[in-house]
Amino acid sequence: SSFFSSSPTHARRITRAALPRTRARRYACAVAVAVDEELACMRIAELRGAGTWWRGAVAAFGSARAIFAASASDLAALGVAPAGIAAVRDGACWSELARMRALCRQLSIALATYDSSAYPSLLRRIADPPPVLYYRGPEPSSAAPAVAIVGSRKSTRYGRGVAGGLGAPPPSGRAGAA
Picture 1 (spheres, one colour):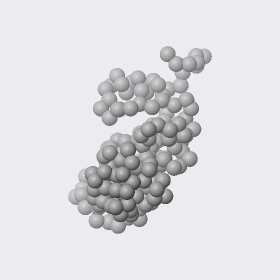
Picture 2: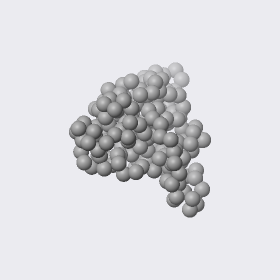
Picture 3: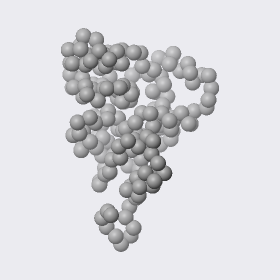
Picture 4: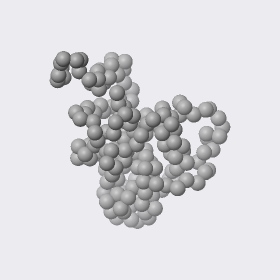
């Protein structure tokens, strides 16, 4: 069975459960981290309202990472609203994102960024694709057929059961979906 999520909140909840509760966790942002494309995509996924502008900014600047090095005037020239510019410039906690990524790897949760081969090609075609997917199991690009479930953060027991049924193979001797 596979697990896919575009929610950094969901991945953060899973990885934080694996972290020991210590004071050191609060002060992790003081550590310098080399920002790579994967971390930049994770950060974009956390920005409110980025869905409307991030793909244009990546195309204009050449990478997700370059968005965070761009000047406020360059972002504004692309049509990024002042709130979006402020979100980009707010001093992200890169070390916390790096630690979350490391914990994802320890928990066998992989990441598929928008520009990676693991990212589903059909998902790239929607109006507001997530910049990163968190997944377990086979790469999301190899999942066929695929089902996407939107709005699953506060799912009910029934909803989780239905979602699990959608992801399960059909009983032997039967094909199709009901």
